[in-house]
Length: 112
Length: 232
Image 1 (cartoon, each protein chain N blue to C red):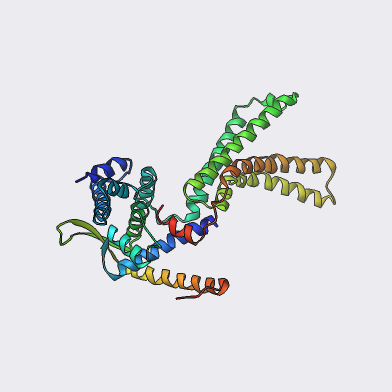
Image 2: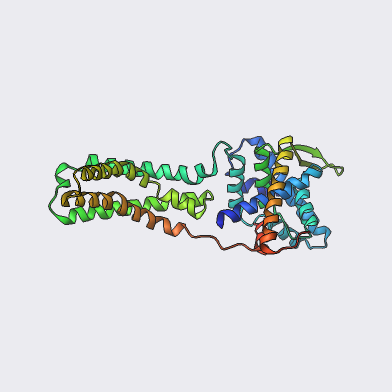
């Protein structure tokens, strides 16, 4: 289960980040804030858990980061999806959908 | 305003990236800490509470430095098993081969046929300890790079491949010879058993014992611990 736990944790975190930045390019703090907000506080990223993931995804070519200046005049590194990232998001969504579908059947869960 | 950038720069000094990338990373992480601090102040926290809130973003700076190093140096050409099994496993296999070669070449011929059992017991004990250490090293390395218990086990007992390669053909040849003669005679039977015990069972047991302390599973994860784990 240790591998399963690690891969579930990483896979679910990747899905959350990819899904949030698919809507619009965002900087790290905003990505964490959106995920917390959209999951009603159930899922939270800290700096320590978010940035290694963001850099890994950038290195894999799923995201592209650019420096942008906010309306308040502050420079922020914003992450957006690349074509490879869009494809990866589709794959990850299908995998998680199949996983939850199977789990809901086995575990008698109600799906939203 | 707090100098978050200096704080990040100091804690990530060990991160091996070029200076420009380091500056970018420091700036980005410092901005995140500043945003967290500002958010806490906006929610009505005191200065001390806001600082504490920002600092809670990184419970362990050395763990973050390690995670950042892995993220920025991830090699997409290496599979997970290559990192968690083959790399540690091959390294300890090479160490085992080197150790055995050194023993073979540095031991005087007379020592191999020394009539005193104590000499052989001492040699066997040292070899056992050496393999115990190798098993531990392989499993610990695999665990360090995120190997599952199965992968740690595979990495730790990897030198058995070398033993199989050496003893396998010899035992196979002995058995073929025995079958061609219509049965295993006593001397040949003893030879096969000796070879199996010395070349496979004893080193395998030593490696396995070395692996055991590092093969423990993590605690099972439930829904709430999963959500909590995201923050770690």
